Structure formats: structure tokens, C-alpha cells
Length: 236
Image (cartoon, one colour):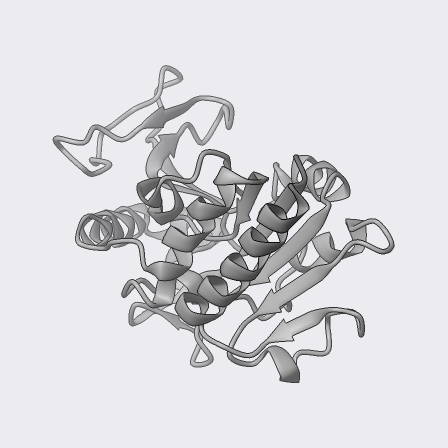
């Protein structure tokens, strides 16, 4: 069974009403990114940061996967599929994808700020990280999010997954955010690369051999998935 590795960005979640990354105006849900998504923001005003991510949790409860997420799950009937997402939402999981790696953390988890390996699911009943929610080392628990200026712990694991790909698909990302954008360089020579994004034809940071589909995720993913499923059926 061929292996498909998919890299997704904010574009696939935007159609579900979620802004998961910086817009051109430098804001994230009307907050300055520097005020809610940096280690300095946490040090300066951790209560504001907690409130921001708790609001995002409430928003996520009202969000549902769109066709971009849903069609990716259909590939699992004929391919081994690994998703690498830059998004912190759980819409891929809600849609039913089996293998999802979150490069930039997960909104529904919290972690210790002194031991990054101490990670817990946020209680679904409370659905928030409370002030005074302490880790075993006596420090306030923080959102399990990779903030600007922090290392991306799972990037090496992601690179190894991309090296194993028989097909590589990029969806809804500008390919301008590193280190995630650099994953394309781990694709083995000769492996087909598909890039789905409304501005796919305007993005220079992909190879000339990349097959570009200049559509939003819900449309472009459906087109490509149907094509790949047809190829798989004809090959059997």
C-alpha cells in the first residue's frame, strides 16, 4: 500500500471558521500575535494568554470539519495516510483521520512549563486551563502550543515521515513558515508533489515539478482525492 504524507496549514481550517495562524495584518482573532503567542507574552501576562487560548477552545467546540478534512479520510481506504499539520485544532481527528502529527502543538492539551514532556489532555468538562492549575513541580500549566521563538520538537519526526512518502500533498499553507515549509526538501526525488491552495500558482517556495491546484481546500482536496482513489482502483 502506497504511503501518502499530507502537510496542512491554516487554509484547510479557515473554511471551518477557524483562524489558526497569523493573517496579513499581524493579528490572530483580533489579538496581536506578540501578546498571545510568544514566551515573552506568557511571562508578561500569562492570564491574558490563558484567556486567549480558553476562548479558542470554546470556538473549537463549535467548529466542524469541512470537505477538505473529510475527503482526506477517504484516502485511507486505499493508501496509508499520514497527516502533518501546522494547525492546533483537532478537525483532522474529528473528521476521522487515523494518523495526525501536530507540529505546532494541540489546543486541547496543556503542559508543564518546566518539564515539556509533562503533557495532559484538558478536561472536557471544564474545557479550560485555569489560573492555579499547577504541574507537579508547582508551576502554572501552560497551553501545549509551540509559540513564536520556540523550537518545534516534532520537526525531525515529521521530516522522517516525509522521507517515506510515495506521494506528498501540501494543503492550505503559504510555504513561508519555517521549519514546516522546509519539509518539502525531504521528499525523495521523483515522488509526486501536489500543492492545493488558492494562491498555489503565486507561491515560489515549491519545486517546478509540483502539481499545483489553485483552489480552496474543500474543492481542491475533493478533486485530488477522487483522482488518487481512481488511480488506486485501476492499479488493483
